[in-house]
Length: 338
Ligand code: ADP
Image (cartoon, rainbow, N blue to C red; front, top):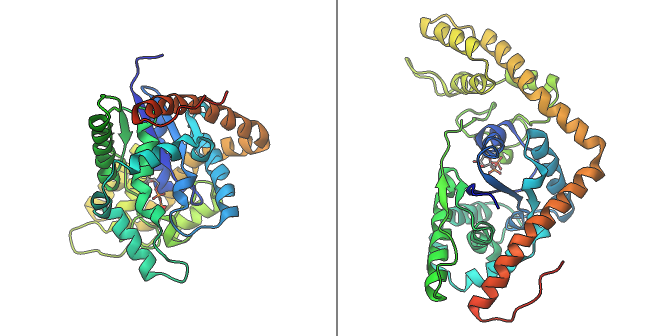
């Protein structure tokens, strides 16, 4: 056992990974592996809380695994949530120490319920959507995570995880679960290239995001057609231009970034030159990820076996937790599966 602190973080398999996901989350995951014991989950059960297609879900789960590994997430740190059914078991137990009222107050539940109400035919609000943060608490607490890297939007859920841990410990008379702390890291927020008044997101559609696996041609095309002139008022940089500078900085091309920013402040920046430089830098930045992805895809079976193996290893921790939890809450004990 190492004395490094534990980190747990999860991502939903909902489609292609885009530049916003990479710069806002995955790049940070890769870095954290240097200093922490990390477990990163592809949480397919969570995806079921909104309308989805079964076949696509299985496909997207593996797609995401390949993309994460191409970005540098180590296979040993990765697991697929549904390969560890203990998450569900703990979720049930936690649902019995969570109050209905506190789940009703979750802003993400309110937002997503609204989306479903406003949307189309299959948009009923499932009990699963309501329970989402309880499952999330189980994902985190089952591994006794010390830290969870979160964005502001997930802070409330993490707070709930801490409340659940506290209530469980109090009710069953043992300081058993740790109280996971948020780990805030400065990560860039990337905006949609087609509508920079909004955050880059899959749900807006393919025009709005730059897929991490996009080929050179597409990357260049998308940067060149990026909207630059919305929301501009005299004296302030438009969101579209800011976004291009954000992307340029993230690619590590600091010399061009500084020079072009100086041009901007001097009032002689040509947007076409900025786009040219951003497109080239971004394409060069993404190329190694694409190459690594292509390599992984050459041997899909090996990658899948690795992930089954790592999920199995990680499952042992979850099984041990459940053995102790069963003991504490007064239900029958079962032998872990070997
Ligand atoms: P999407 O909005 O495309 O569905 P998710 O909500 O699945 O993306 O986000 C997965 C992770 O990527 C989260 O940690 C989220 O904070 C991060 N992320 C998503 N979009 C962006 C963005 N435009 N800029 C920075 N980070 C982002």
